[in-house]
Image (cartoon, one colour):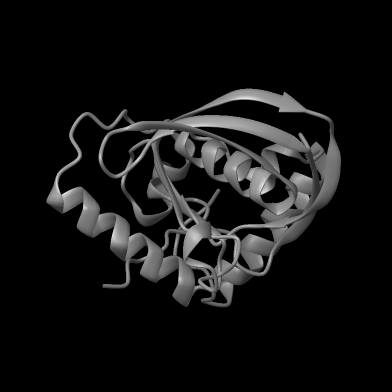
Length: 174
């Protein structure tokens, strides 16, 4: 079942999610719906707050569904280590049509729980690292425009206000 992706302006995107303490059938079904929603929206990552669930959970697949082994669920993730820096263009399903260059670590190590509650650790680089960091920010109440200068953030605000007036943004925003 496709879920509704909230847009910037919804308060759920600006607060840290709660830790997940129980992995049950309901949560596993919700995670399946998150993957379906992400694929339908042509995304490579989706955090629970983006579908109005304030929990520390995200899904990702940098192959966009082409490689089953690339499908990753991270429950209560922690960034363990970062290395290097790289600047690359970034977008967000909660900011449709808005892209900016953002500096992020080039290589990361992350630890999380899987669908069975088992801890796992992996290293990621390139797009996968960027995706983990972007989605991890979401579960901690941070959005990618917070990496921009105040002037660029104001430009984003103007774009969003125009789109609200045009009826192309379904969340109120100040």
